Image (tube, rainbow, N blue to C red; front, side, top):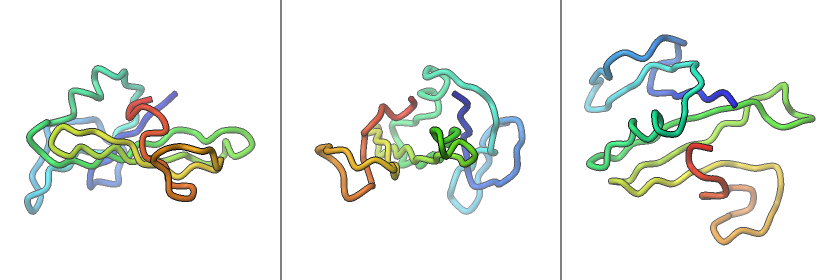
Length: 105
């Protein structure tokens, strides 16, 4: 499964050192298959961070991408996404789910 990490840039570039932009750290958008350890290294437990990830959607919508957000709130990490299915879950609001899947799955 491919994952893309987005900061404030909208270009596909290799990840370089983060840059400061008006008080926000932005990471260049990257297109690289990453493992969970590499993704967990991006989490800074002393900051608030929002990451945008995407992967190909499931069949029959595999022509589209499935995006989700991973939110780091001072070390408390949660995953937010909109799913087509309407499955009972303890933290869902309509089709908006929190932590239906692990953050970096």
